[in-house]
Length: 259
Image 1 (cartoon, helix red, strand yellow):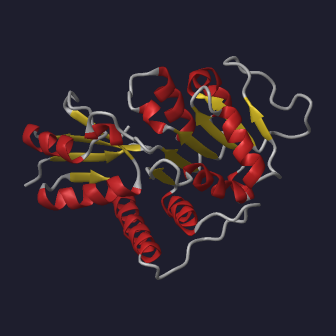
Image 2 (cartoon, one colour; image 1 turned 45 degrees about the horizontal axis):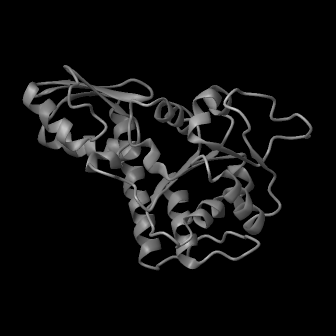
Image 3 (tube, one colour; image 1 turned 90 degrees about the vertical axis):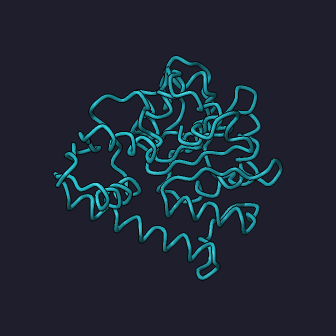
């Protein structure tokens, strides 16, 4: 007996199943809109592959793309093993060479981001989340980097970058309308700093250009129907590495963690 069908679409999963099974899926996957119709759509990432493989053990379905499901699930198991080894001090954190040496917990967080390709850092105020974000800029294959922050903080980020990574070229976006980033320079800036309000205008330019994105005060992206959320997601999906920084990652509801 099967309860429906799962189909791999190249960049995601489409699931058509019986109504009571859809209800279970909506509870399990926070990215699924509770008002979704008969077709459930999930992004294709290793965690979703593992959870789907677990889910179909309870609710068997016909699967198109079973090899991808197995491969993604295996990758997620390996990632969890690496994370456990790091957090249990069975392996040291990666070394990030900065002008002012980062603290061990900052290097550990940056190492977690390398393993997972993305991380939400929710340390308390004053523990140096900015430095955690800068650690990953020490690796040249992560450049160029986009830092997105609140309107009054770009100059503060520039000062911290000058202190911890003075060799990086930094540019603060002056306008929400795109302009030539190569003007008066022979290469792209290593670090591009924007506030959230300018992001929508630059989305097409920065998507696929930046390899690493830092979202400072990431609670600004808690509303998925906003233009800045749409722009942030468009850019982040093409980046290799994504890090969110916030001492207050949610304001009201637990589901905001997903956004």
